[in-house]
Length: 333
Image 1 (cartoon, one colour):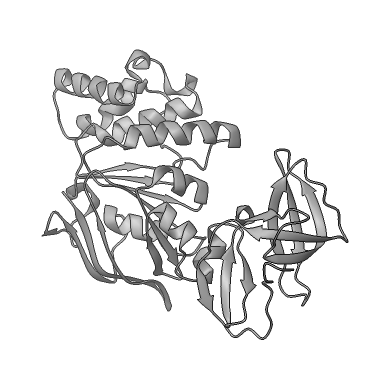
Image 2: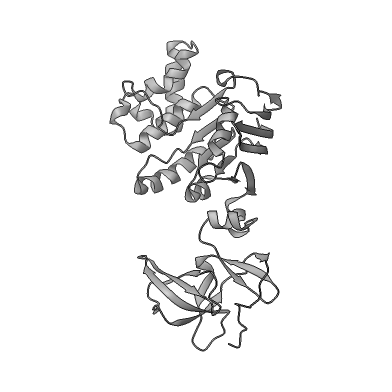
């Protein structure tokens, strides 16, 4: 069952939070709503859930208009940012809870809870109190609880935000493995680009209540629709050419040129940062425009104040702009 949003609008007071959102969340696909604070991503998720009413537009579940239906009538699974588990219950008790509210018999709800815990590989800890579980294990219990009633859509609000960085990296991979085989639409909110890149089949980047770009993680990173998208998804520098275009370059797109070989651009190095596995160089073109940021090998010999010659590894996206001078040099430099 696909979820369709048609011209969704939301206003709080005199502020337009969402401005005519049109999207489709397809079955078996993980869609990540990505954006900065205030972009409208959580509001949009809660409109799909029925927790927040839309000011205008329609929400359709499999072609059925559910815009006016409350959350309890929408048949959704929702994983809250805090997980919202009951600390006095076991893992199985937490997963059973939605079925108990629906009046499902004890035997059936126990079996369905164990089946849901098995999906997230937590059946062996079914009788453990959730207060004794790790952060990653509690997250799995929360997902099992959201899945136990066979929802039409699974919604997750910042599911990794409460985890420390090292645990987050590991759980991110595990979460992707859990979500990938699910037959329902999965919609996940995050402000973290790394979460989006690992978890998403489809990324919706929201900015100012509008869809700035929709596509695969590769599309958004390598072919951003505009400068706002490019800068939100990582360090973005621009090199101007003689034709008045700007070429997007990421830190990994430039490499030091051989002393006797051709180069595409010369930078005066302003700062060098050692990052462990690499060095990050900040430099400027002879015209002194916006800084260019480049990642080079940790063994490279670079120092502030020097001139360095670079090659462009791949062709970046060109964006027309008014440019008076060329920052790209010919191969004979």
